[in-house]
Structure formats: C-alpha cells, structure tokens
Image (cartoon, rainbow, N blue to C red; front, side, top):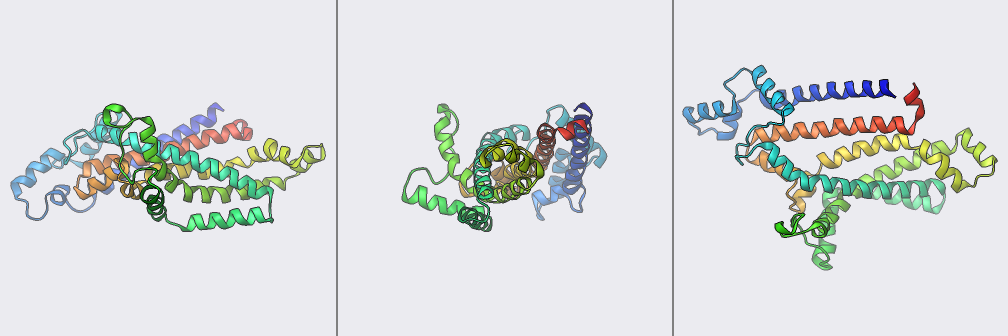
Length: 318
C-alpha cells in the first residue's frame, strides 16, 4: 500500500501546486489593475500608487507569487483590505460555521442515500423502487435555495420550531451553545443534503444492482445465505467504490457550494465571506478563500483514493 499512497500523495501535491498557479494567474495576471478595481474610476494617481504599494502590485508577478505561496506554507497570510485582519483569521472564524454545516449535511446525505439506494435495489422493479426513484428525481430537480426558502416558511415562520436565520455561536459567551448552534444549522444542512442525497441514492442503487448480478453473489446465495445476508455482507462493500467517488465530490461541493444557502439563512460562513469580499472588491480575501476551496477539493479526492485502497484490496496489491 506504500507505493500506492506515495503515488497519490505526489499527485496531490502536484495538483495543489498547479491550483495555486491558476488561482494566482486568474486574480493577479489578467488584464486590469486590482487597485483600480478596488478604488474605482475616480481614484487619484496618488491613492492608486499607495494601494498598489500596499498590495505589492508594484513588484514583479513572480516575486508576488513566491511571497504568497511562501506565506501560506509558513502559516502567514496577507491582511484583508476591507477588514484589516489577516485572511487566515477571517477564514478560520468562518470555517467554524461552514465546516460543521458541511459535515452535518454530508452525514444526512450518506445516511439517506445508502438507506434509500439499498432499499430501492433490493426491491428492483417493485413499488418501493419506483417510489424512491421518483422521489430522487424530484430532489434533483428542486434547487437547494428554493428548498431552503420552503423550509424557512414551514419550520421557522409557521411552526416556529427554529429561527429563520442567523447563527448564535457555539459557546455561551457568544450568546449560544452547542445545541443552539446545531439548531441553527439543521435547516441549512437539510436544504443542502436533499439534492445530494437524491443523486447519491441513484448512484447507490445502480451500483448495488450491478454487483448483485455478479457470479460471486449467486455463489453466496447458493451456499445458503439469504438475500439480505448476501446484500449486507458481500454486495454493499463491492458496490462502494462508485459511491465513494460521488460522495467525495459531493462533500467538496458542500464545502465550496454553500454561498447561496448561507446567504439565505444569513449564516456567517465561508460563503458569506466570499460574497462580502466580492462586493467589497477585497481580492486578497477572494484569492485565499478560492485557494482554500481548491485545496479542500484536492484533499477530499486524496482521502477518497485512500478509501479506495481500504475498500478494494486489489488497489493495495496492484
């Protein structure tokens, strides 16, 4: 398994390096001046020169890239233009909301998708299968922001079980607590999970059906295992590789794609930080957040590759 992990780790590091070059090139080297974008057309030459010096735009691009990457490797980031704080502090503060939200949404996605996908596959062609597939098609078709608004109308406005938005914090000093924080994330997590669960349930069903037609499953049944025993002991594990692939991509999507849902629920997460940074033309924050999101996607893909090796011994020995 060592060579397999070493190869995947080398690919992981190379992908991160390429991603950093792309992020820097898109935000720093495209035509136009970041200082002019921030200050607008009415800025004076003196103010433009001062901001260019503050942002380091008066230095060569290669030097700025090396300083940026070197700072990231040392845990040092530039200061936000609009907030005046290092971007690492801003991102770390917002991750306290976005990361638990993504984890909660991913947990709901996996539980619902596996349960519904296996249920539909075990009743292939019957009413239960048709019902799950119809419900999943509806889930895929509904945008998550519309579903989020519907959840607010039902559970916050009419039933008044939870608040319509905002985040009280994780500690009592912040005015909230663990339970209060989870309550604030339940509806956003459901809104994010419904679409992802519908997609993953269909993938799970298809993968389980493919494995159930294999010869080793028929052999297991011939040896006396019931359909349920063969399903849970042999079929599900062999059907997990495509499920893991999609689930890994979905988790990365949940982390990187919360902008709309966080704005609907007024959550102070990464999504709102990016939205506010773009509105304030704070390209320093946008650059570091985009790099973080790219790193999340790459890291999740690396973790999925490791899980492949754990699930399928052929990859470890190959």
